[in-house]
Structures are given as structure tokens and as C-alpha cells.
Length: 218
Image (cartoon, rainbow, N blue to C red; front, top):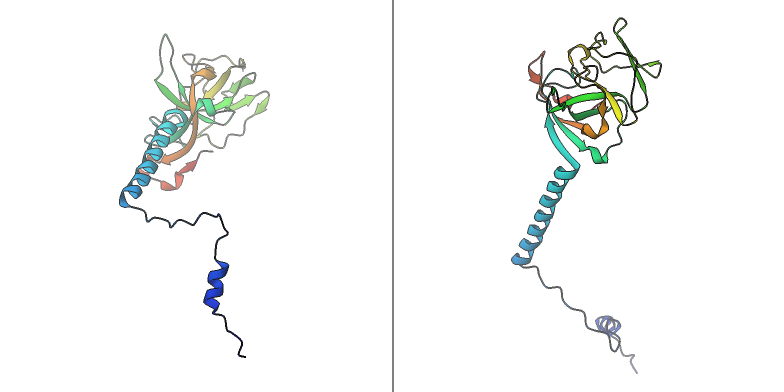
């Protein structure tokens, strides 16, 4: 008697039979235009809200105006600032601060570099042009020229624990903590720390934008 041959397709079907009591698989329904638009709208709203919250509480943009931070920053530079509530400030940071003074305000905001933090002692020698913190002469490759002015402040100066001493990188053309109208700055007046140079302003010597300057400040 000839052996009965089994159809392989039937064997496949047999192995695919679901166990008794199992619920049948549902076919995936094709996405409609309405559901696709809903998903894209939801993603867009989420992105917009996230950006608004980020720029409200986390970061913001500020423009540089004036020569006090040359040659690190120039007028017209656009900076990305991290809100102070997320910052642990330290010497070397470039910061934005409120320069409010009840008698004679310097400006609404200033962009400066932290030279010393709370508890440290700052000294400026206008003869040698050096700045000393806790007895150590600072290595300052970022400054435009040595520091030959004290602007009326008596040195050495010891900072309170909640103060920082700020200076511009263009030392002899900067109103900063050496100026008795500002002095040492309470950390509560620091608006934030500069994270990035996003858009460069024109370099004074060339009157053109140097796009290679974009990036993290040093």
C-alpha cells in the first residue's frame, strides 16, 4: 500500500492552530490620517512646552554690550546662560549678574569672570599687574592685558562666605568688583553662568563675525 503523503502547508497550518481557550490575534488596523495628525500635534505641543519651560527656568539668552570682556567676548555676542539655581559657582566662571546699587547703579546686568569665591583673599598689584588669591598669583591667559588699576578698592580684600569677586577680562577697561560702586558681589545677585557662545558678534579688528569662536567659554 502506498504511503499517504502529507501536505507541508497543512502541517504548518496544524502547528499554527492556537490552543483551546486562547483569544484570536487581532489584525493591526491601519493608521488613519486623523490619528497620525493627533500624534504629530501631541509631539509638537510637548516639544514647545518643554522649550518654554527650559528657557523660563533653565536657560536663557543674553547679548554682550561693551568692551569689558575683550578678547573673550565682544559686543553683539549672543550667550546661552544657565540659571543660577542650577549652578555651583567657582573661580574662572564667566557669569551674568545684577549690578544694582541703591546709590548709583552701574548697569542692569554685567558679564564678568569670577576671580575669587567666598572666604578667599584677593590682592591686586597695580605695579606688576598681577592678581593674587590666597597668596597665589593667578595664571590668567584669558585677560587682554595685565591689571594696572585698582579703581579705588583697598587691597588685600577678604570675601564673606556668600560673596564672589568678579573682574572683566579687559582689566583696565572694566567696571567690576574693584569699583567701589559694585565691590564684592553677593551670590544672590548672580543671574547665571555662561555656558556657550552661540552667535559671535563682529570682531573689532576685522569688523566681521568669527564663527570659529562658537562654543564653550574658557
